[in-house]
Image: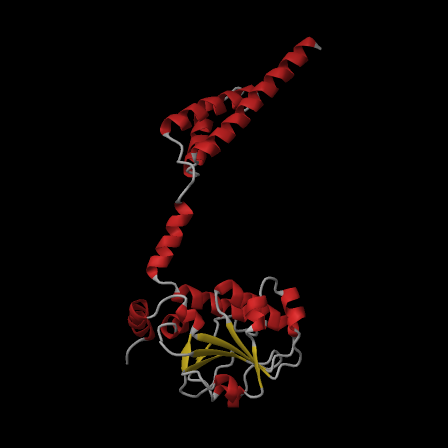
Length: 274
């Protein structure tokens, strides 16, 4: 039998070839079956907004107030306006080709069990509608609800305390969904953008000038009194070099070092004259 890891890897490759991001997220619908607490609905909405999902269906919610939800989950008006409220779970799942239920309860049936990462990597590859189903806060998904699912997701929690808050469980799953849906080129582009700087990195000459000033400042405040400054400066060098400072940052710290020197010398003059 083919392992989940191999199958997930192959389908992930297919997803990068045939499914564009964010389409993989837009094809996913989140279904809350009979949610009881409006705050929990808002937490799910916030988690969806954070991770780029936008389709939410509520089956017979105990309460619903769009204004209060957006008051808890700020800047989610667009998502809240799209929320669908339906009378039955069958209606909520009608257009889904694959339904995966989130549950902490293991059962003896032969349904597929997924970790959040395995489910996300495989199911975001599908070109059709996938539904992620959550149950009531007080008792989760009953057996008749689990029967409607093609597969089940279980978050590997502490077995002695496996029950999770609905909002917490949602953000774990949605994070994995987003991570799996992002194609490699988007990941790389995002990483590169974080590394790009408006100001170039400090040069060797910039750093050497800074280290000279910093050593003077540390000497003025007595850090090197009666000790060899070389080992301490070596630590400072390693610390600042590890930070990969740009020229503006080095200039700012060097300016602070000059202020330390001026203040220390001023205090020494004042002490001598007093």
